[in-house]
Image (tube, rainbow, N blue to C red):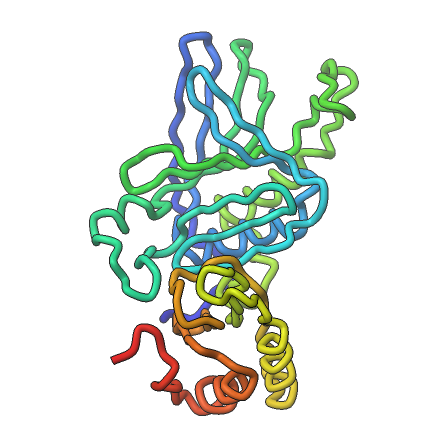
Length: 289
């Protein structure tokens, strides 16, 4: 894997769409690889959640969702970015989705699901005045996946639409900084690594494979072993990890490894043998031999 670079090589791609009503959308391409989209999306969801909205736009329908608190989860699992709040969540395919521990997703479907094109955009009214700013993503079949709506100087408290004389143009600072980083390559990404590629351990809390759901001792054993080993790896709990048998199940994102029948002693072994010595526990791997 290539080393992470905090500098983006500009695509120098731009295009436009003109609607039948005279609105013009001006697009500027953003590299769609994980070391570009990962830091971009992590920053937006973790640091600017209160300023943005996410949704989908199609002729005849629009969905816009806002955050009322920081996301409870923002991780990459089997190629999909998962961002979860207490009441809703979203998924966006940023790397190849293999299809869980069995890797059953066909190659053609993996290519189709992957976000293959991204762009920063401005939307101009028929008088050619910018009125909307955001980011848009397309999959491998050129289908629109998701949009992120960036702050607009013309929207006041309570979605009140402001006249030109009262517009707050300071709200464009986020768009302008993102453009300088991801379109022009004039500013550096504000991270030393890709935040979405930082390894984590996920403990499944689903009752499908572990009816007692007494997963907390496994979480505590992992946290204790990681602290003793001085490893900077997060431990999170998760919904279904696609194993659905022989729980408790633990997933290690560093090399996409699933473990079954994880007790607290096994959890400590995972840290001591797999993470420290790169020797996976064969007896607990899923799927096994």
